[in-house]
Length: 341
Image (cartoon, rainbow, N blue to C red):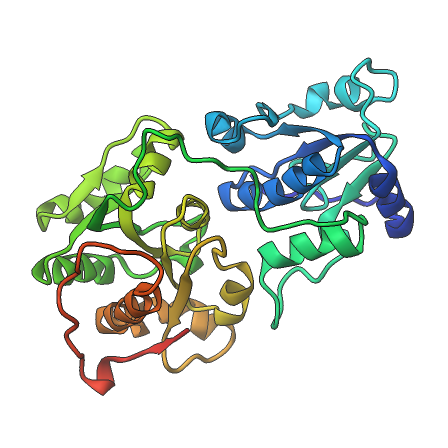
């Protein structure tokens, strides 16, 4: 599902004024896990400042037990939007808000007052991180007094934070092929991690598993989880996360696990990187623009680059926790090192 076009004029000052003064607010989530977790920051900040917020989104609904005290419902079908968001509805929403214009659908036919977050900010660029940008928007634009980066997620008490410090959750897919590192490199990374005493586990959606037989063929473990909440629990008790730019990376960070993101688009990924826990990105040492970059970055970024960046992430976190001691750092050759942050 992609954003729909929205030809209606958008009166940004008026829309922001509606949101600023609304008491009952409907937050509609895009059909993306990462976007949904980020927008939960706005929903939570509004809630903690006395607004009555109802969240509509399938991903957050799948994690509703992890968001105690929040009114979370499944995604609102467009066919029901008019009845639910209309001012005549007994629910009485003063304003509907979503991250993207036209995603999950245009709001102007259904809500008398609505706001698109992306209509007021820079979508991607240097010198900001999206989570912090949303927090700042809550303070500077909506006028909330003390917003933070918390989005209301609370890990169930039965789970133990980073219980298995040598277990590394790896997510090798994403929403588009341009965001995905080469599968053979993921396999080689998993094998290298195994040789160094780690326990890599790959996370795939059921529909993706047939295309990743190479994992089982190389003796690499695959997580079999029935629910998104089960994936969240597994990652929370893992020591680390490595993956493409994806919603699962945001989920890992949100449940307190340090993340390493592989990418060919450092500017975009730096802005959208997971930001609740320690985070690094790694990309090829030489990046050219346009289609060449999109086509070849996944081959030019080698497993040695990523392994070196992972060791840097470990050192970043050394003073944050008291983990089981990981295997000793093995310095790679300088020629193996890609660009990393």
